[in-house]
Image 1 (cartoon, one colour):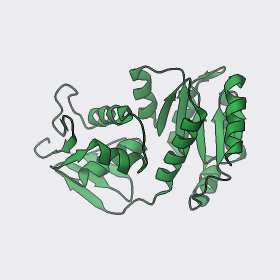
Image 2: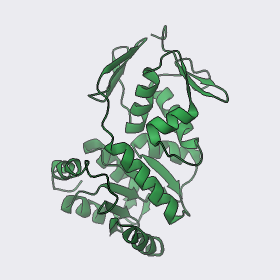
Image 3: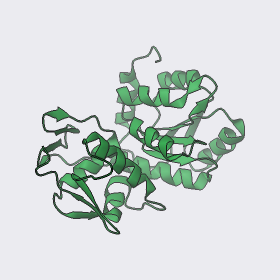
Length: 251
């Protein structure tokens, strides 16, 4: 980790959350391929973003110590290590939004990336316009105030304000999206929540494209709830519709 305390850039990031404009949004692009980073950085600048390129983990840590970005776009295969190292460091100390941009497109790579805490996962090659739309969607979600309250369903408890959740007496270690999914499901125990509603509520009201990311996050959430992936009972799949959250009797 960089020597500078993460608190400094966390405070700077939080102070900017009330600004809903894309203009001036600071984007840290961690990418070592100049054929990708330079044209994409130029495209971001034309759209009003303020990009900064880091070509390695070391440069990214320096950039994070210098100034808090509003969002991090992170490649995984970097010359001095795996980008997932930096992702873990970020998630250990901050909730700055993060999108992984990588050539690693297998299901296990996506699962690991999302479990680490990425808000989205984009496989190369990508279209600049799509990634910028995803950036705006992630930022909109991160800037929305969380509803306060405590939810209880069976042996699952969710403290929305504190962003903490438990099953039985054990606290769950959830990524931001996993927590948001659990909170949304816990608000409607025993009811079917459609895939469309989950995408709209947890990702963005103007989400587009595949719901594959929902399936990946749901698999990870079920695992952390102690579910058997082959026969889940707490979060049941209603084929062609969505999911039903029914933890009653699971303790």
